[in-house]
Each structure stands twice: as C-alpha cells, then as structure tokens.
Image 1 (cartoon, one colour):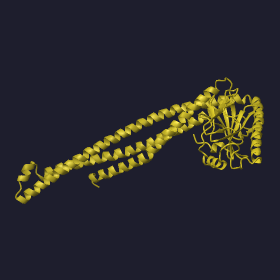
Image 2 (image 1 turned 90 degrees about the vertical axis):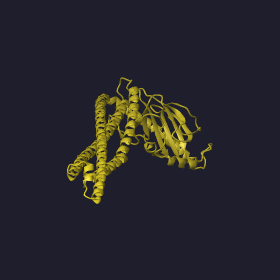
Image 3 (image 1 turned 60 degrees about the vertical axis):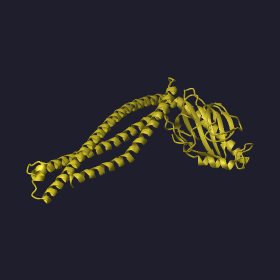
Length: 403
C-alpha cells in the first residue's frame, strides 16, 4: 500500500473511530454528567436534612438514616467518576493509535517526496527544466518531456498538499490527546476528594451507630411503642376500607356525593404507576415497604405498610393524584394527623402530619397541599406514604416516579 493510499485509509479509520466515540462515548459521557448532577443534588439535599437532624446533640435513627443515604450518594458519585475516567482512557488510547499512524504516514510521504525530487534530478541529468525540455531530439520527445514535467509538478503539489494535511491532522490529534489527559487528571483529582468525603462519612456513621447501640434498652422500648402505633394505624385504615366495601361505595358508578367517575379514576391511577409525583418535594426513602430489620437492632424486625420519606422541616405534603378525602384522623404517637384519599378502588395514605389543610369529603387534585410534615422530638422530619387497592397493601415505591 502506497503512502497516498495509506493516508486515505487512515482518514477513513480516524473518521470511523470518531463516529464510534461521538455516537457512544460522547453519549455515555453526557449521560454520566447528567447522572452525576442528579446525585450531587441529592447529596446536597441529604446534607441539609442531616444538618437539621444533627441540630440535636443526641444521636438518632433519623441521623443514621440521613448519613447512610449520603454514603449511598457518595458511592454513586465516585462510581460515576470512575466511568468517566474509563471513557477518557479509551479516548486517550484512540488518540495515541491515530497519532502513531499519522506520524508513520507523514514520514512515508516525506520519503516519497524526496524520492520524487531525486528521481527527477537523475532523469534530467542535473539540467534545468528548460534545458531538459529543449534538449529534446525531436518534437515528439519535446512534447513528452513537457507533459512529464507538467505531471511531475502536479504530483509534487499533491504530495506537498498531502504532507500539509497530515501535519494538520497530526497536530489536531496531539491537541485532542493533551485535552483528554488534562480532563482525566481533573476527574481523578475530584474523585480522590469525593473518596475522602466518603471515608469521613463512614467514620461518622460508625460513631452514630455505636452511640445508638449503647442505648439499646431505650431503643427497644421505643420500638415496642412504635409497633403498637403501626397496628393502630393499620386497624384504622382496614376498618375504613372494609366499611367502604360493605357500603358498596367503591363499586358504584360514582364516588358518593362527588362528581368523579369511579372506573375512569381507577383506570387513570393504574396507568400512572411508576410515574406518580412524590408527596414531598425533597427527601429520601428512610424506611422501605414490608418487614425488615431495624437499622441498629438488627435482630428486631419492623413492619411497614408503606414507605417513610425523611425530608426537611416544615415541608408541605401534597396529593399524588386526583381524588376525594375519605378520612382525617389523629393516631396517638408518631403518626399524628393521618389523611386518607380515595382514587376509585385505590387509596393513598399520608401520615406523620403536624397539621392538615383539607376537609373530609373534599375533592382534591394532584399536587394540592394536604398538610405539613411533622418533626419529632429527635429533630427528624418524616412523612409516611401508603398505597392500597381495596384492602390490599401495595409497595408505594413502585408507584412513585424515580428520582
């Protein structure tokens, strides 16, 4: 393969690599940057929640939950940095390969150009171009030598043009390589800083855990009380739902005394699965649905008919879908005010409210303010959110949009 054909082959390969990088590498890099921004916002949000929870000198479960969530965010952030570094490493390897090939091609083109000049000199025996032409023995030779010099001149110009193009491409690739190396160094430096933050958080987590563990007797007593409160709330909800079924209110064509079509709202609610807005604008899931070990006293299993969302103080709690307020109650203990909203054959429950902004039988729409989140004596602000279909408990996390 001649240097000329090498050049065009190299250009083709360079373009192909560029398309691959732009189509996949750039897309992945863009996605990673978006994900990183989301995680950074979540970390910042959790820091604010942690700061409010940590205002109390005493270590709390809410504080432990917040710092555990922050550790989770830091780990995701570090993983995102690692992925970006990997993409840049691939780009650097690509640039090194192209630079090597371009340099080799440039050397070949220069050698070929030198060979052309030398060959021309030899063929003309050192004569000048005019002497070479006029030294022709006949008109035919004169014409042939003239055309030869003309073609030679064109070939030399093309060769010079190719050398210039390859030099330009080589410089561009070197600049791209330098830029990628600088970006990689910046990312590695930021990744190291995030790793240091993660190590500090883990140390703080261990400290809080040890402090809570030393108060095992008090925690066990609180958990017994909490289990009784959970049972009281479940009885309240179950009784309401059973009464609704008994009275056939949820099987009629209309929700009693409200102009809402039962079948349509049930269908609309079902279609909104995995896309419902969160009941609070900030926060994270501090306790999942179902029975699971306590974060400190792992031998004790805690039931949860919904999810707990730890959030900021005084956060407004909003309706996740259109519906009718079916029940407003006070459950003694941590649940405080409880609001139950009907959406056809589905019900959503909002508990741990310090005040309520709606009335019984009120027709509400998505995003309407239901109430305000309560902050407990330990400084933890948390709302409990539940989803039911008739008397069946559902995992609310599966119904809410991803954050």
